Amino acid sequence: MHASAVIVGTARVASAPFETIVRRREAQVMRIAFRILGNWADAEDVAQETFLRLHRHGTGFRDEAALGSWLYRVTVNLCFDRTRVAKPVAEMPELRAAGISAESSVIRDQAKEKLMAALATLPARERAAVVLREIEGLTTAEVAEVLGSSEVTVRSQISKALGRLRGILHREEI
Amino acid sequence: MTEEDIRGLFREMREDSVPADSMARVRMRITERTATWRRWKRAALVIAPLCLLVLAVALWRPMSPRIVLPPVLPVRVEPAVMRPEPPPAQVVRRKQVARRRPPEQPVLIRIETPDPDVVILLVGN
Image 1 (cartoon, helix red, strand yellow):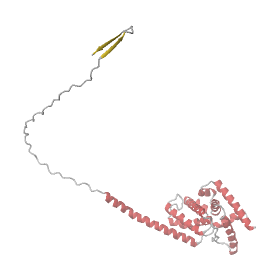
Image 2 (image 1 turned 180 degrees about the vertical axis):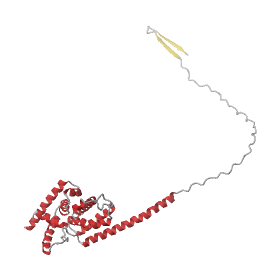
Image 3 (image 1 turned 90 degrees about the vertical axis):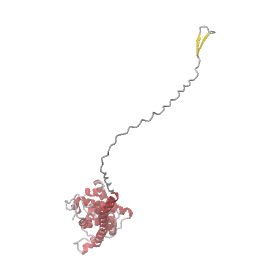
Image 4 (image 1 turned 30 degrees about the vertical axis):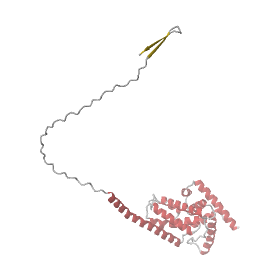
């Protein structure tokens, strides 16, 4: 499911059992953590801590959007805490897209690997903005809410980040 | 690589799946931790009322027993015997002691006359 669709979604599971929420959201939380941190070990730790915080906080959210927003915010903040301690390691993604032929998959995977490695060089906040906006598909307003900054700042961060990524990938091609 | 290519790759990444073993590990760790938390919560639910009960017993004081008064028996009132009044106590009169006054000073009146060599002095007791 598209992430922004989840955030703007209806009040389906405002007070769903904790285990249900974990099952439905764990992949999303882990994906964000992995994209920001660059390795699965840290992403696992962040996902675990996020859900333990959810357990302590309780699952009685106003609606699905409130839950999604809360999860994004906690995940990103935990990632920021980790990036302050250690620089992200651009571990090559083990994520595999389904439904792509072997050859094109290899080419796309190489491109993704390069992109991920370039992404890992960006400052944490820019990286988070790109991950949430471009990969998770949140709107600029939603990203601004998660990061606790203005929409203008987010737009500027994404624009700067994309420029840097293009520059890095261009240098690699040469 | 153009910006559109980058955005396209990012869009593809949305569909990427997370390694199953990673998810399983996270789920297992969460289950363990929440189970521990649940055990503590259950223990607290049992222990808290027990503590309250012990506290209540410790603070409880039984009410003081009611004092039962014996029945009042009629008492025969005997006529009061007139006793002779005791003689009035002797009043000791104190000898009044005259207050000592300070010795009176003689009054001196000085009258000056127009003549500077003549001054009239009046002395009175």
